[in-house]
Amino acid sequence: MKKSLIVLFSIFAVLFLIVSELPAQRGSGQGRNRENRNYNPATVETVTGTIADINTVTTWGLHVSLKNEKGTISVHLGPEWFIKDKLSISKGDSITVVGSRVKQDGADVIIAKSVRKNGITLLLRDDNGIPKWSGQGKRRR
Image (cartoon, rainbow, N blue to C red; front, top):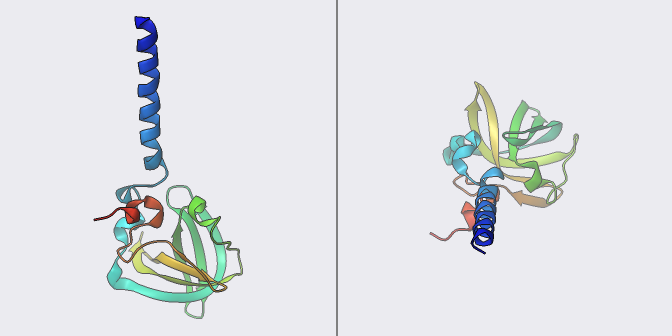
């Protein structure tokens, strides 16, 4: 009987540890993602253009190259799993992005706060750049 209780307790302990690690693996921590730390509310602007390319970067999520009359800029949207069911984007789509223009690796990039396509707006971050997928925006302060 004592052996059964030890085994049962061990199983529950392992399950607890696994479940408690899941949010961290889905990008819940703002500090884990360097683009969240770079978001600057003072540099927010609106950019409209056509999607020239789409890339999924494992560590930083979904990025698009947005082309307009001023040139092409990389736009960091967020995790593909957060975006794909809410807004469909494809190469050649016209979108409007509101986001923070920052330097990353010496190049200008936009860290998107929101993206708008065909009248549908997907909010990705709050005014301070905290991602909606992080769960932090749901906490009461």
